[in-house]
Length: 489
Ligand code: NAP
Image (cartoon, rainbow, N blue to C red; front, side, top):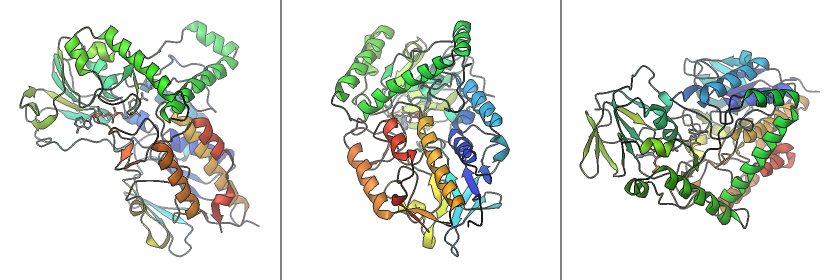
């Protein structure tokens, strides 16, 4: 007979990952759940990224929880305020918000040296939480990176990262320097281009930017969704299947991978030709790597924005930041009043802000010194009763990460249920299973589109962020916990 029916679960992070995990645990009848969130509210990246025109490049009918299908989306590719409002409302409705402790920045997780089973999770203010199960859901894109250029801190005007947007800085009439041309920059540059007097965009690598089939949903759509809710399932299903084609192509899984990516490449070429008439600018915007190696970007207003008269695209490398601007490697100083870093996130530094001490004092970051890895992206031997949501090798090149996180949440919830129902107190992935899985990942990843260029997917010789298959494969592999892969004691 089990002595404690509900394991004490501590979840780290209240974004889509952490809240989804809490929901799955509740569904399994787990009641003792605490979600520790370092910020002052829920939402994760959708709370942090408030830059102008922040939006999702995955259609909302798919980029949403399967248990909170929303007939009221205002458009196909929703903007950040609507996504955050959706997340908050769904969490509220499901009673998840009550489980969240805000302002709780977890700094360490330590496995009890006595029972080697329970964890002490400690926050920056010294508060300690005891847990039978820890679920890390800190995301891959939560730590902004500002490159360490010489003089980076000498700039006299406001300087900020896209994920820490300074809404108090009025950009109207200002000369703005933007460093980076990734998924964030291609959204905020069109969002501010009309306000500024001049803009210099520093592009280290040109992205492949293809048309975004965006559309505002009209009253007739909403009426149809209300009347025939099945239509929502159809739209979600069709979007899922389309993105699965892209996943298969990026993963090099199908013999027509190259043909499909070439078709996307043709769409990019046409898009560039149509939107940028100036041949010298067009030449600058041709990527120097194969399509798919970095994230393919969707935008209808990026090229028109950077083709504007008052925008200069600089392809020389950044050499230094100076008090009045940015100096490029050719020695030219590009003067600016405001500097915006669109330079992305430390994606491969998984759980960087948390010291995780497992069995016999093992340090998770030492275990990951050659690159993060985890069985199914969730479990590491030596770290029993510790699971990750959106962990290593679970990111996607072009689909809804919420699908992956829901699969992980359901898996972890099964584990919690097992701990509640049996006398087992400790669950740990077998080392041989972990090694075999990692070998499988790296072998498969070596034939994906993500090899052969530098991107945030790569950590040294390994791709540590991305899942190489279709979402459906991951869902199948995680749907039912294979207890033979785990040791229960
Ligand atoms: P990112 O894709 O990593 O882009 C960073 C940009 O900064 C790149 O252009 C990069 O150039 C440049 N850069 C980095 N270090 C530099 C340096 N030292 N000197 C010059 N340039 C430098 O970051 P992000 O745009 O913030 O997007 C990150 C991820 O967030 C995306 O891939 C996506 O998954 C997610 N995101 C999603 C959405 C969405 O719509 N769902 C929107 C925004 C972000 P290189 O390419 O040469 O490295």
